[in-house]
Every structure is written in C-alpha cells, then in structure tokens.
Length: 215
Length: 414
Image (cartoon, one colour):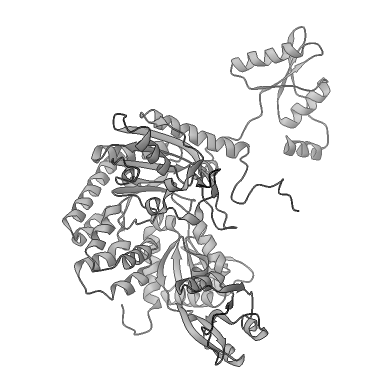
C-alpha cells in the first residue's frame, strides 16, 4: 500500500508536527537525522515531505501530497481548494495592523499606504472595511517600510510584538488569529478516507493540551 | 516592444502526438458511448453573452470568466461552462421538441485561474444533459451512463453520490441569516470542523445543530446512511436519504459496491444542483474527473421550466490518466514510404492511395533521390520503402549510418 504523503512546512511547524507524531508513537528518526533529504519515512505508513509553506498548499492542491501541515496565514494568503480538517493548536500567532506609535492610522482623508508580505490578506482586510488603500508587497522586514516613509502601516504576523516595539511601532488592530492547520487533498480524502481519518483523529488527540478538556 | 509570437498564453498549450491522440481517443470512446444511448451531439458558441452565465444562477464567479466586449458594447465571455449554454439552447430553440431531450457535447471551456499554479485555463470537457425528465429512471440513466462511459477509459475509478438538498434541509431548520448560512456552507465545503464548531457553538443546542455539526463527516461507504438516519431533521431530509440509499443499492447490485461512496456534505458553490449529485475520482488525480447532478430549477431562469440532469467529464484528466496507465499506445511510424521514380510521381501517389484503401499506413516521399528517401525513412522509423516505377517493388530500409546525434536531432524536428 502506498504510504500517506504529508507535506510539512519546513522549520518550526515541522518540528512541532514531528513532536506530535512522536507523541502518537511514530518513529521519526529519519526526519530527525534527515541530512539533505526532502522525502522521509515516518513509521511505515507515512511519508513526510519537507517544503516551504506556500508549496505545501500547492502540493496538496495538486494531490501529489495527500495531506499537509501549514499555517493559517499561508492559507489566508493563498486561498484554499482543499479540506482544512484540523486546527493543530501550535504555531499560534496573529495577523495585525501596525503603525508608528501614537499616530492614528484611520485619521484624515489622505490615501493610506500599507506594506505587507501578505498582500491578499491585507487587501481582503481593508475590503471588509470598504477602505481603499494602496497595498505594497515587501519581501522581508516589513517594519522598515513605515520607518523609511514608504508606508503608513503594515499588516504582518505578530507574536510578542517586541520587533514592533523596538522600531517604534505598535499594534493598531488585530486582523486574524493564526495557528497550524492540517489540510487534506479533496480526492485523497475520498479515496483514502479510513487512513486519513485515523491519522487525523490521532493527531487531534495528541494535539490536545496535557490534561486539558477534550472538546 | 516585446513580441509574444513564440509562446502561448499562460494556462494554454499545444497538444502534440500522444497527448493529442489520447484526447481524441477519450472523446471518441465517450461520444460513441453517449450516442449509442440516444444522446445527440450539439456544439454551442465559444463566445456567449455574459448574461447567459449569470453568476447568481451559475455560481461561476465573474473573476474567472474571460470577458470582452462585442461591437455594440455588450459584455461577452469565452464559454466557462457547457451546461448554461445548453440550458439556454434547450429553453429557446428546442422548446417544442418532445421530452425528454438527450444532448451531449465535446467542447473546450475557458476559466481564468491565478497564474503559476499549473492549472489549465482551457480544458476539454465532454458530457451529457438529459432534459425534461425527472425521477428515478432518469437519475439512474444518467449515473449509469456516466459509469459505463468512464469504465471504457479508466476502469478503476470511485463514484461518489450525494444530495444537494440535504444541506438545505438542515440549514432551513437553523435560526441563521443568509450570511451565516453561506459561512456555514463554506466551512462545510472545506470540511473545516474547527470553524464549523465555533459557529455552531453560538446556537442553542438542538437536533439541527447536531446534524449540521456531523454533516461534513457524513461521507464514506454504505454505513453513512445509518449514521445519517437519526440526523434527518425533516420529513424531506428523510425522503432524500431513503432515495439516495435506494440508488446506492441499485448501483451496488451492478457490482459497483466497492467503488461506491456517499458524501452528504457536497455543497459546492457553483451549485445549480437541486437533487442528487455525483462525481468520480481516480488514483493519481487530485480532483474529480467527472461531476454531475440534477438541476431542476436552472431552465426556469431561461423561462422554460423543466427538470434536468447531466454530467461532464474532464477529457484532459481522463486522457492524462490513460497515458499514465499505459492505455494509449505510442504513435507509430507509417508502415511504408512510397517513393516514385522520376516521371512516376503521380503513379506513386495513386499507389499510396491504394495502400491506404487496404488499411496500410503510408507516407509519400517528397524527396527526389532514393538516397534521401532512405535517410528520411530511417530517421522517421519507417521500415519499408515501396519503389514505384514501371512496376512496384519493396525494399527494407537499410540501417541508417549517419551519426547518432543527427538521427536524434532529426527525430526531434520530425
């Protein structure tokens, strides 16, 4: 039988997922000692693929991976043509609108410019407010844009807010909560229902906080 | 200025040789299967008025339609779907035909997808519409036509049955606004259990709330019917479930049992569907390869209310699967190259026609010298040359002694 193929977002989500797998009892030694390999076995029924966040979605949408673990931020930015079956509860952070400290972003009638690594999320957020803003895509350190005078504010992922603080910025408004999600290709869900539901249930149980109430 | 004269627009492609053959083969198999069941072929225009595709009715969002403006400033679109035009056609020109009307089509549809995702904007679809018939006999006919036709191309697929009304029946029993209903529909469509729970947690616990909570999990094999039974919130929902079960059992009796699935939570947005819905999935293809269902209200939008059911098959998907599964033989070189000696060109052509009549595949040599003809035949992989002069004689193509690279280059350009 073909192993279930799961794409993991490289980095922290990968680590958290591997811990989850180990908690369930899967042998993750291959992933722990992966070297440069990108496709690795976990136990004998699962195959893990390591990819960048947006690529996890691409591989799952095309069905070359049956499942994936990816942040809600990436899902919001890239859209969804797959099943989003589980909130894994880790990788928690928030999308927020942030700008220079003490300045009211919404004040005045002049055109506002917002910089973000997530132009689609930004656009959707301001569309929901029926606000017409100029969105500029920035690839790294978005905090620079308001400091350099390119933008009035940024929409970005905020965990502790310390980067913002150190650069004289503050959160103006929360946009959305983010955490890691388990996603499933629509055709795989139909063709391999039993295996997928079993693994999903295992992951759901293992993702419950220790001693926490089961919802 | 950059000239785009050597590439095709993103999302489109040239179909060569095997790919092309696979497409044509799928089309031929399915057309034959449809026409042998009394379906008649129609072709609708590649360009239609935008109004025909009204997003409110079709569920096709305006963003994905290729639009342009006609001479009079009216909005037109490249056909994004074939069922809407066929509904228009039936409601107007075929209104007075005796019912039911059985139609089939094989034509491309155009949808603009976000760039660089590897999805095609132009894809070939074939399908049938059975118009002016309702009820069990028509439903069974449509499903069976789908099963039998698809079996001739990719025997190993799974067929999924659902009912578009099941979600509606439960939703009608919940105290929710149309916006909340749409939000619930969205999270059920993406089987987002967590989001669904958080929406439903705000409602007073009741049977419809429990039913809605369970809905996205109501898919799988025959056991789904038993699981859904206690969740039938209305008499109507119960009838739908019983009906679906009876169809399931009829199909299982055909030996389809292990390949049948049920999903009561099929709630796509582009949902003109009113009754049963069905789709087919195959290994190694991340999406449905066939989709269809009953759409009893669609024709009313064109002022000719009548029940109807239909399905469409992605020719592109089925062709690729057939290639992957080795069901399409590679294109073979012709058997014979016909070479006419100087002064016998016409005779050679007529001889080629004669061979073709007899069912042999052959090519006419356009080269003036036998040596060139031999070289070409070797490159092309043609085994025999027919020499046409006063008489006709055959010779085997000698082994081509040119350099290997030359031979390979030649094959690429042939």
